Length: 133
Image 1: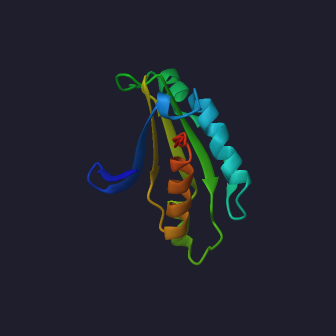
Image 2: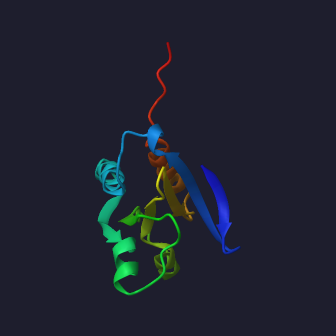
């Protein structure tokens, strides 16, 4: 995973996963994988899926070159609600884009290190484990 600043202000974690590195063939399969991870977590709650690609096309928006599908898996780790300000950074979303030979999986850095660690672990789990002989 790499961490970048999107538009020079949003800390984003991103992984490019070649289709031959994973057993998942579509963004829907990857979304289902994340839904399973969320369901198996004691602190996460699944909220929904957002088909960003279909939405953008439906409103006559612009889709970047090579993007053939894009989904957001929306969920929340919200085990603390110390102030109203925390609502600004919740819920969480993991984006999944199909760009042909590669899936791009990304999420905005959470204000909680354990949440980031969990999401990074989930994303890393998409890669097929190499078989060693």
